[in-house]
Length: 161
Image 1 (tube, helix red, strand yellow):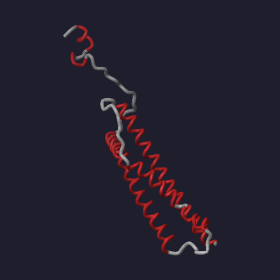
Image 2: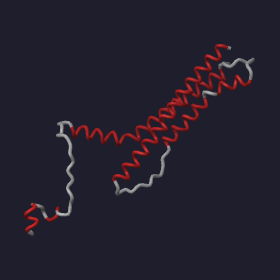
Image 3: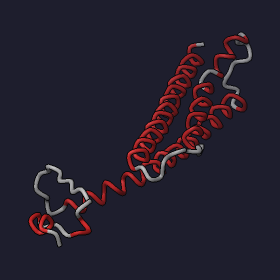
Image 4: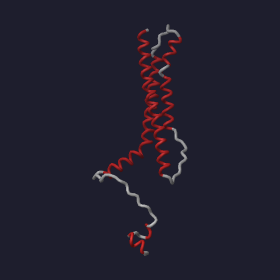
Protein backbone atom coordinates (compact mmCIF):
# COMPACT_ATOMS: atom_id res chain seq x y z
CA UNK A 1 0.00 0.00 0.00
CA UNK A 2 1.10 3.53 -0.58
CA UNK A 3 1.91 5.82 2.30
CA UNK A 4 -1.11 8.03 1.61
CA UNK A 5 -3.44 5.06 1.95
CA UNK A 6 -1.81 3.93 5.14
CA UNK A 7 -2.06 7.41 6.64
CA UNK A 8 -5.77 7.73 5.83
CA UNK A 9 -6.50 4.15 6.83
CA UNK A 10 -8.41 3.54 3.61
CA UNK A 11 -8.57 0.22 1.86
CA UNK A 12 -7.62 0.37 -1.83
CA UNK A 13 -11.13 -0.65 -3.05
CA UNK A 14 -12.83 2.10 -1.07
CA UNK A 15 -10.58 4.95 -2.06
CA UNK A 16 -12.86 6.20 -4.85
CA UNK A 17 -16.15 5.73 -2.98
CA UNK A 18 -17.67 8.75 -1.30
CA UNK A 19 -19.10 8.20 2.14
CA UNK A 20 -22.08 10.36 3.03
CA UNK A 21 -23.01 10.88 6.65
CA UNK A 22 -26.41 12.36 7.52
CA UNK A 23 -27.24 14.28 10.67
CA UNK A 24 -30.04 12.45 12.44
CA UNK A 25 -31.22 11.88 15.96
CA UNK A 26 -30.18 8.69 17.72
CA UNK A 27 -32.06 5.59 16.65
CA UNK A 28 -35.03 4.36 18.64
CA UNK A 29 -35.42 0.63 19.30
CA UNK A 30 -38.44 0.38 16.97
CA UNK A 31 -37.03 2.46 14.08
CA UNK A 32 -36.61 -0.59 11.84
CA UNK A 33 -40.26 -1.47 12.37
CA UNK A 34 -41.38 2.02 11.35
CA UNK A 35 -39.06 2.10 8.34
CA UNK A 36 -40.50 -1.21 7.18
CA UNK A 37 -44.00 0.14 7.80
CA UNK A 38 -43.20 3.25 5.73
CA UNK A 39 -41.88 1.13 2.87
CA UNK A 40 -45.05 -1.00 2.98
CA UNK A 41 -47.24 2.13 2.97
CA UNK A 42 -45.40 3.45 -0.06
CA UNK A 43 -45.70 0.11 -1.83
CA UNK A 44 -49.44 -0.13 -1.12
CA UNK A 45 -50.32 3.51 -1.90
CA UNK A 46 -51.22 3.30 -5.61
CA UNK A 47 -52.96 -0.10 -5.32
CA UNK A 48 -54.85 1.30 -2.31
CA UNK A 49 -56.07 4.30 -4.28
CA UNK A 50 -57.11 2.02 -7.14
CA UNK A 51 -58.97 -0.24 -4.70
CA UNK A 52 -60.80 2.75 -3.23
CA UNK A 53 -61.74 3.89 -6.74
CA UNK A 54 -63.08 0.42 -7.50
CA UNK A 55 -65.28 0.50 -4.40
CA UNK A 56 -66.45 4.01 -5.22
CA UNK A 57 -67.44 2.86 -8.72
CA UNK A 58 -69.56 0.13 -7.11
CA UNK A 59 -71.27 2.64 -4.81
CA UNK A 60 -71.91 5.04 -7.68
CA UNK A 61 -73.34 2.25 -9.82
CA UNK A 62 -75.59 1.10 -6.99
CA UNK A 63 -76.86 4.65 -6.36
CA UNK A 64 -77.55 5.21 -10.04
CA UNK A 65 -79.43 1.91 -10.29
CA UNK A 66 -81.57 2.58 -7.22
CA UNK A 67 -82.28 6.16 -8.22
CA UNK A 68 -83.26 5.22 -11.77
CA UNK A 69 -85.38 2.38 -10.39
CA UNK A 70 -87.23 4.82 -8.15
CA UNK A 71 -87.76 7.23 -11.01
CA UNK A 72 -88.82 4.60 -13.50
CA UNK A 73 -90.80 2.05 -11.55
CA UNK A 74 -92.14 3.79 -8.45
CA UNK A 75 -94.09 6.50 -10.26
CA UNK A 76 -92.14 9.00 -8.16
CA UNK A 77 -92.57 11.81 -10.68
CA UNK A 78 -96.17 13.05 -10.90
CA UNK A 79 -97.81 12.69 -14.30
CA UNK A 80 -99.22 16.24 -14.29
CA UNK A 81 -95.81 17.89 -13.73
CA UNK A 82 -94.33 20.11 -16.43
CA UNK A 83 -91.69 18.48 -18.65
CA UNK A 84 -88.92 20.88 -17.62
CA UNK A 85 -89.68 20.07 -13.95
CA UNK A 86 -89.57 16.35 -14.74
CA UNK A 87 -86.16 16.87 -16.35
CA UNK A 88 -84.81 18.19 -13.06
CA UNK A 89 -84.99 14.68 -11.62
CA UNK A 90 -82.17 13.65 -13.95
CA UNK A 91 -79.79 16.22 -12.44
CA UNK A 92 -78.39 13.94 -9.64
CA UNK A 93 -77.26 11.46 -12.29
CA UNK A 94 -74.91 14.01 -13.86
CA UNK A 95 -72.42 14.23 -10.95
CA UNK A 96 -72.65 10.46 -10.44
CA UNK A 97 -71.70 9.79 -14.06
CA UNK A 98 -68.90 12.36 -13.82
CA UNK A 99 -67.74 10.72 -10.56
CA UNK A 100 -67.66 7.35 -12.29
CA UNK A 101 -65.49 8.90 -15.01
CA UNK A 102 -62.98 10.21 -12.46
CA UNK A 103 -62.85 6.84 -10.72
CA UNK A 104 -62.20 5.14 -14.04
CA UNK A 105 -59.33 7.60 -14.58
CA UNK A 106 -57.84 6.29 -11.33
CA UNK A 107 -58.23 2.69 -12.48
CA UNK A 108 -56.78 3.32 -15.95
CA UNK A 109 -53.18 2.29 -16.37
CA UNK A 110 -50.74 4.58 -18.12
CA UNK A 111 -47.48 4.11 -19.94
CA UNK A 112 -44.86 5.73 -17.75
CA UNK A 113 -41.51 6.76 -19.15
CA UNK A 114 -38.88 6.89 -16.43
CA UNK A 115 -35.19 6.30 -16.12
CA UNK A 116 -34.99 3.02 -14.21
CA UNK A 117 -31.47 3.87 -13.06
CA UNK A 118 -32.45 7.16 -11.47
CA UNK A 119 -34.01 6.89 -8.01
CA UNK A 120 -34.91 10.59 -8.03
CA UNK A 121 -36.72 10.23 -11.37
CA UNK A 122 -38.61 7.18 -10.11
CA UNK A 123 -39.50 8.94 -6.85
CA UNK A 124 -40.68 12.07 -8.64
CA UNK A 125 -42.78 10.20 -11.21
CA UNK A 126 -44.31 7.89 -8.58
CA UNK A 127 -45.24 10.89 -6.43
CA UNK A 128 -46.81 12.69 -9.39
CA UNK A 129 -48.77 9.60 -10.39
CA UNK A 130 -50.05 9.04 -6.85
CA UNK A 131 -51.04 12.70 -6.42
CA UNK A 132 -52.90 12.68 -9.75
CA UNK A 133 -54.79 9.50 -8.91
CA UNK A 134 -55.61 10.81 -5.43
CA UNK A 135 -57.01 14.05 -6.93
CA UNK A 136 -59.20 12.04 -9.30
CA UNK A 137 -60.41 9.86 -6.42
CA UNK A 138 -61.25 12.92 -4.31
CA UNK A 139 -63.11 14.47 -7.25
CA UNK A 140 -65.10 11.25 -7.69
CA UNK A 141 -65.98 11.23 -3.99
CA UNK A 142 -67.01 14.91 -4.05
CA UNK A 143 -69.24 14.22 -7.05
CA UNK A 144 -70.79 11.26 -5.21
CA UNK A 145 -71.68 13.56 -2.32
CA UNK A 146 -72.95 16.27 -4.70
CA UNK A 147 -75.24 13.74 -6.37
CA UNK A 148 -76.59 12.58 -3.01
CA UNK A 149 -77.33 16.18 -2.01
CA UNK A 150 -79.04 16.80 -5.36
CA UNK A 151 -81.09 13.61 -5.01
CA UNK A 152 -82.18 14.70 -1.54
CA UNK A 153 -83.14 18.10 -2.97
CA UNK A 154 -85.23 16.34 -5.62
CA UNK A 155 -87.04 14.37 -2.92
CA UNK A 156 -87.80 17.62 -1.06
CA UNK A 157 -88.85 19.20 -4.36
CA UNK A 158 -91.17 16.27 -5.03
CA UNK A 159 -92.75 16.44 -1.59
CA UNK A 160 -93.41 20.16 -1.89
CA UNK A 161 -95.32 19.70 -5.16
